[in-house]
Length: 284
Image (cartoon, rainbow, N blue to C red; front, side, top):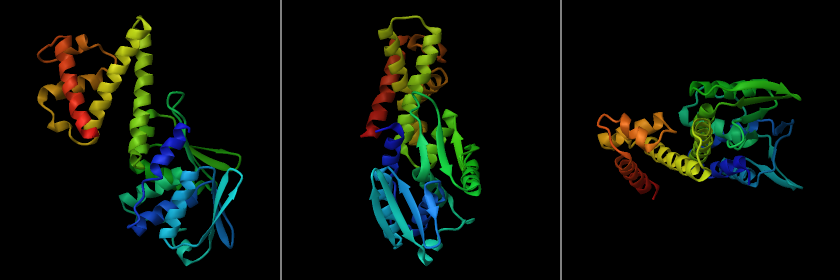
């Protein structure tokens, strides 16, 4: 599967059957997108992704909204009958709370979004048929400091992100935890390799060793931060962790010289091993 499909498979498991408002918001997100056609008698959504259509079916079933499933070639359809239940969610809701907004944005990405493998380029997009729908999603994301751009092409409106930081924040917003980790891992590997390639002329084996060690160290630190456990680290571990985040391509020897009480390579490595052991405990 593609990187984008992996993210969507992860998101297909993010669902709260007990909260009707969350389900309505996510369904609303699907129906705003460019993969939805509205007619007088029904609304029809289509996708080639099996995980996505299964999630939409589950949402509609739990909302007790009538729909007709259909498969044509590689494309899956959900034809939803017009009625009070459906009409109640096909409207802009200006009183949504944070959880409902996240569900709505998640639904729009699932409905017609894609994410390019970050090892190639940074590009996330969502397609819409209506400009006001695109602007609606953009405005919600802007509240969370995520700045989409928009272009019109072939009678559709595409909102997109090309900045790695914004893409990472967007994945966190729509609650794709695996997506954030996978994106950051690929992003860090790419960026550190680029930096090291520019600054260091060494053998490939040594280069990969330096890069992989730095990536693993940063991933351990980011995981601890994401779980809000960073402040529980000892002061010496917090000091070396912050130096690594600020200097992703620096050697252990050089990092040690930046410490308030300088350490050699083995001392710095010992601190990172402690951080790794703590991160591994949280991963279990």
